[in-house]
Length: 233
Image (cartoon, rainbow, N blue to C red; front, side, top):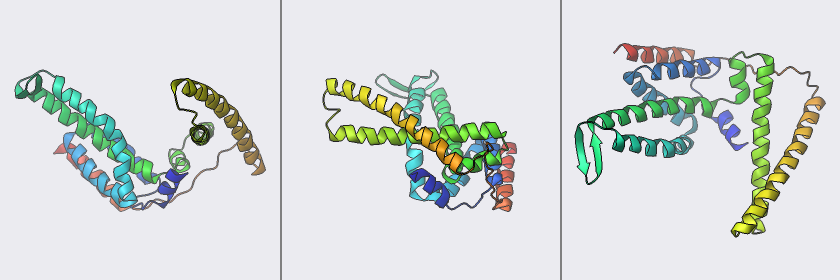
């Protein structure tokens, strides 16, 4: 998968289980304090950009498309002391404060999670959390099944588009019905092949652990201390 290639090839200043626990610790602190949110936004934006360069900007643009309109609604609807009024639109002191807090908290959390998502594969994440084997197997298999489902859906949609299957409302309904049935059948076929592949590799029912040594531990400790300091400022 293209996204997995980015995860593997990304430049990781902090890596290994310490990276995952640093992200979890940071997300907890981000919920607590305004200063931590600023620190986290700056630090993890630098880490993300260093890891994947311009792809990070593309990656965060998707949640921003949902975050900005929601923040705009908050900015224009909350009552309070008017600061700016244009016709029927009104910005108040309370709406401005709430909107600023919302976008800062949300975007800092998104940035922190982006570093985890852009630099960590699912096997690495599951192994670092030390989850029970049945949970790791369930989550990994589900993740793989979703990938298969989307791949098959994309192929079938392209095939239908090439035959003008979505031209007109009547054709759209017919094509959606046919594509849905084919996705189900193709997915079942892929699942059977997936099980055969596991048996061919002598799968014993125990999900293998991903071993990855910690990297950048001093930097991770420094970041955690800076973020903790932000709580007390």
